[in-house]
Length: 92
Image (cartoon, rainbow, N blue to C red; front, side, top):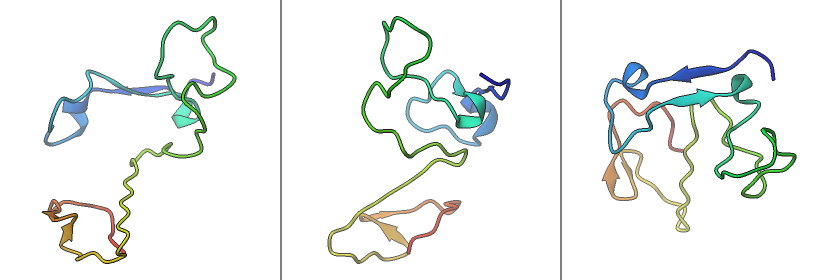
């Protein structure tokens, strides 16, 4: 593994914490690797994903997907809730 590992404490990088944040967040090799969601493997590296296909969610900025079968959204509301004023994504 390359030395592209980074760790973050949520309270140091987010202005407001909501809910129950993790104690520590780690990016392994600039998100080219991820930690397994399970324990008890015979090796440090897994040749396959422990939970199934893993072709997404490797992003420094995170990912948010919302599907509405009616296909209609109001830009100021998402699923009946007002979105945060500092929301940085886009609703299309």
